[in-house]
Image 1 (cartoon, rainbow, N blue to C red):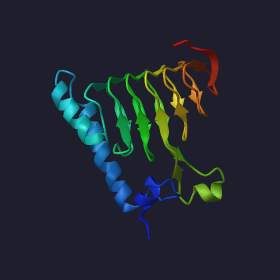
Image 2 (tube, helix red, strand yellow):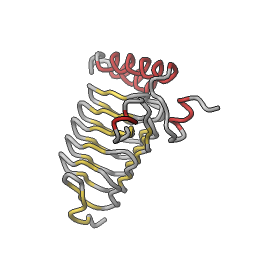
Image 3 (tube, rainbow, N blue to C red):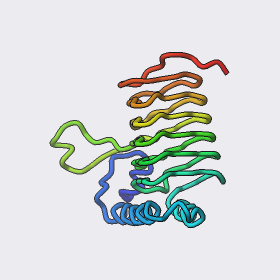
Image 4 (cartoon, helix red, strand yellow):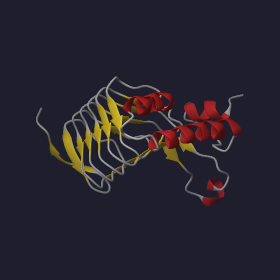
Length: 186
């Protein structure tokens, strides 16, 4: 029989309130607290804390404080990653971010899915779907990226957008819901 963590990682319904997942979240939230309270004047210490949080990184990456995530080990960052202040990643599923990605402030990347029906929702069972962000993507400030979304290479997501479905490569997309408004010639 699978553990709740194994169910979560295989995108099955799971109970996030099990002891193992609660412990994982407590551990990473303590690390996020340490990271967010370490001054920018100590860049090596900040990077060392991020290495403990994140599942995979390139060599060159920056995440401005404050940064929050649920587990950390499901987050993969490519080379030359930059995230401005107040990035939140609810990584109950894999979040894979390519090379040369920049993310504006107050962005949320949310893998968690809760049931719509109240009688199911109050059982505290949830599912999660992965999110993939391609290479050379620019995400403006105050963007929300919802579960199961893939954003293609070289794409720009405009500030304030809510990305509810896949966005192709080489486009500018904006709005709520986010939609393609023009192509980018490469």
